[in-house]
Image 1: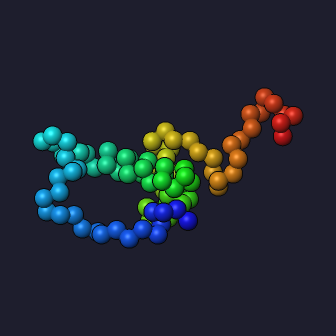
Image 2 (image 1 turned 120 degrees about the vertical axis):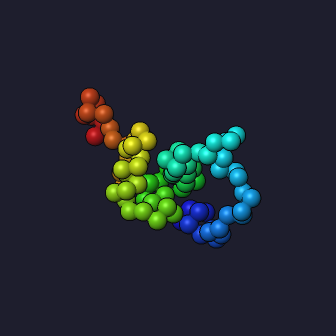
Image 3 (image 1 turned 135 degrees about the vertical axis):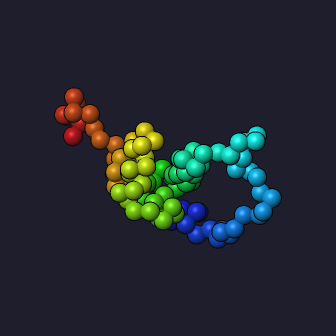
Length: 90
């Protein structure tokens, strides 16, 4: 299990915590979500299924998010598919 799965986080933000703001403009929610998903994925060793557990979403949802972000990972944690141009590698 990844370190994020066992961590204990507070669900509240301090009233004066403006770390989600860049300059004077708030960050768009979609940008925050995208960055958060990418960071969780990285901390989970690029395992979509582990990241889905941490994020509290299903495996279909994590792959939908990754597809939207243009991130291609092998499904089910298996090996990267072998190119069909080299059938002897099978």
